[in-house]
Length: 250
Image (tube, rainbow, N blue to C red; front, side):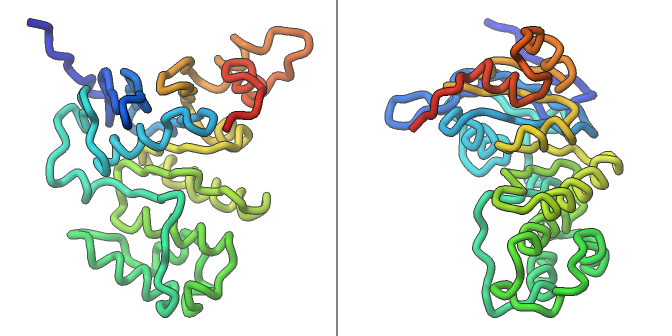
């Protein structure tokens, strides 16, 4: 009989030998991750690497085929959903509700939540709080979706490509909100295709490919390890391309 792996008290979430297959093909192939409380953790990888499947298992949206997921050193229980926040890559909002009405509606789903006025202030939504959801800009919509993920003051926040399609200014506003939560001790798990974003706000990076973790460490450590060549610019994008290849994938 094998020894049971004991989660470390400094980690808010850990996954052990996590696996998930679809139609016999492995999407996640036995990965291990330990995410420290209060950190900002970036999960990177090309399309089809298994990032979204991994995150959805951690969020308890889909079940794993095998492996263990520990939250605060124990199995996830009924309080888990009350203690996490999720910003999905795609979320449909009701067009006939205003921004403020949407926040109030979602707040009712939680046993405890922050004042809606505080979320409006944090996410810079004051100017559009009375606007209908289908009348706000892309950047405002992303800040609203982030606000929905923060309503319950979650200890653990999942952000799935939170700035995709945004202009640089709108992207920086999202970064500021993420940093604010992180400075308050909240743990962030971020997926993104923007290497600058990951390098700027993440403490630790894990790079996935073909369902496996192929490298992990701080952005600085990964750059130092993999960008020693003369023709290798010293940034996270260079690390990503060196490890996953430069060819376009279907």
